[in-house]
Amino acid sequence: MSDQQQTARPRLERRRQYAPGALIEPDGNRMADTCVVESGLVAMSIALDHTPLTCVGLLSEGSLFSFHPGVGGGRPHYRAVGPAAVTEIPAQMFQEAMLRQVVVRNAYLDQLRQRLGQVELFAACNAHHTLSQRCARWLLRFSECIGEVIPVTHGFLAEMLGVRRAGVSVTLQALQRAGAIRQRRGSIVVVDSAKLTTSACTCPNSLIIRDDDLAAEAIRRGATVNEGPRMWIEREIRAQEPVFVSQDEAYRRRQAALRVCQSIIAQGTTFLEAQ
Image (tube, rainbow, N blue to C red; front, side, top):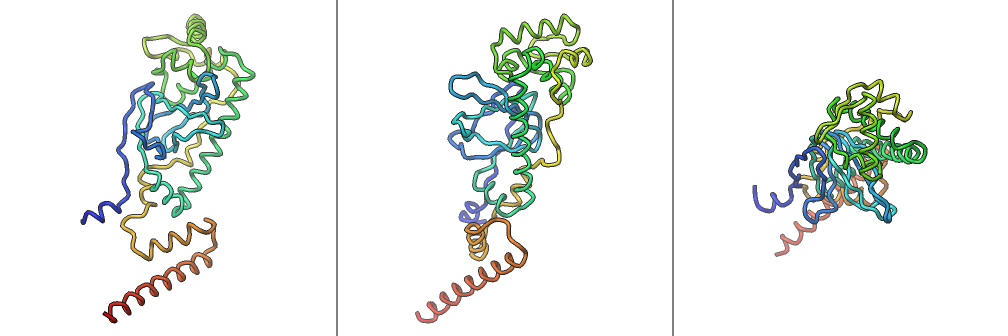
């Protein structure tokens, strides 16, 4: 393979492993890259103005996310809940996949709709339920996803709940006295889920729908690899028009791209013959 062909091949970033509680940060200056959760659970938190970080989303395997600032200007923070693996995908590769694959595009839109629902739920929960109720609910959610031993610290829970660490420590001590949990260094064990449920708010546990998950390889398949002139022209034509077109319209565009390529080839042939 030539150096030019190697340059043309889309680059898939390495798969990065994160320990429980580790902050997931962009690699270098590539803020435009998109990331996909390959395994584990990731908590998405955001802070506006001078407010503390508060969890606004829970991302599971197959979820896409980026480090772009939100509408209010706050940059989201991502932290692994238990061991997690994340693959970084170059922005160009993701855009190509969104353009070429309806499955990738629809799955991403479904994820955005689901994430919006999570934000609305968390906002309502934070406004109407006590710290003790919310803390118990988050422990139930985590135990449902990763088991009874939850590798989170007091500081991690405080960040998710948007409160001071001291308040979380008092809440966990009360839950331990009630026999619902047992605290260890760096983790919390759910001893009695029924008692924990009694202390929790009535918000749902299951926040993640598994039907819209994506894998990095699925996005790679939608990217352009060593494209020729015709493929490039077809892509440019589609990029200038609405994404959703009928089969007849797609056929018309392909034929138009073919005619353009034939014209370019004919012009090149005429030029060479004239030399």
